[in-house]
Amino acid sequence: MGGYLAFEIMRRAGDRVTGLALLNTTARADTPEQAQRRHEQITLTREGRFTKVVDALTRRWIPAARCGDPALRAVIRQMADETGPQAFIRQQTAIASRPDSQASLGVIACPVLVIAGADDQATTPDHAAEIADRIPRAWLTVIPECGHLSTLEQPAAVTQALTHWLNAVP
Image 1 (tube, helix red, strand yellow):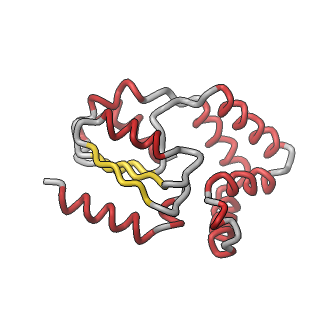
Image 2 (cartoon, one colour; image 1 turned 90 degrees about the vertical axis):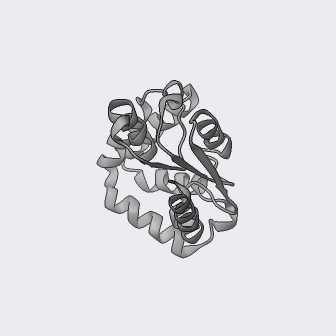
């Protein structure tokens, strides 16, 4: 959700932002299919099947090669448990109703780092490239062997990209 919130901040007070990092996000609004999937997840969660939803999202968020990683799965499970079903429903409702941010990308004046996981199925590298192509001062970094949860899957690569960008931005 961080990218979606960042786009809203940029719309409301972009002149106050001096630098922005967008990780694993898209500027597009949900397609009808994505909105339907979110509503199905909300329904399952309300029916007490939050664990099933989290398991399905985990399979979508991390590459197949990492799905068997018990430590990664445990962190995702812990995050879901700490968030809880009601907060998840609120988050999905907010995400499903977010505006399309593509038209406002060209007015972002600050330096922007856009990071994507090469294997991200949720917000693809193509989505990241769209963002980077439309923001005048954007840098794009695609992290190999990484899905949607880049800070969990490849923390060293994310840190390296952020450090390199921060050191290069005047």
